Amino acid sequence: MHNISEFIKQNITLFDSFYNIYLLGSILNANRIPNDIDILLIYSKDSNKILNVINIISSTLETISGLPVDLTVLSIEEEIDTGF
Image 1 (cartoon, rainbow, N blue to C red):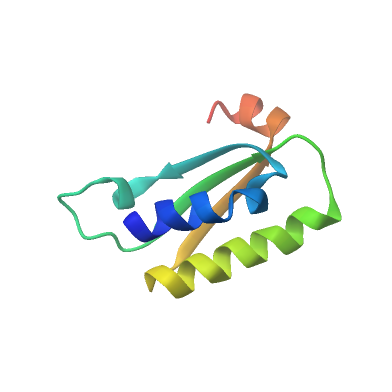
Image 2: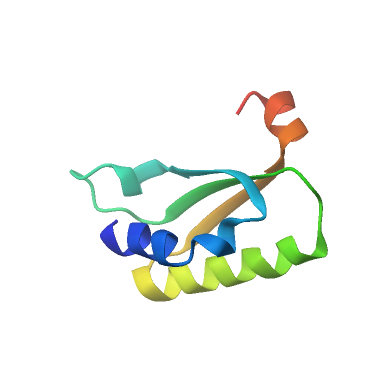
């Protein structure tokens, strides 16, 4: 988890396109060995840039962690509608 936190801190501008970022799942439990990294990204404005940033975030996190990355990306409206 330390590598992931450091990556986010060092690359915070990558996340500028997103309104909120949530780290979820087994990666948060210090007593478990995580099998993947679950991240929920909430965006406020649809943009072609978001797709590129999502790919960069995913591939970089997979490289530094050695774990698969499961990104869920929702608009603010979708977050409200789904009650996530």
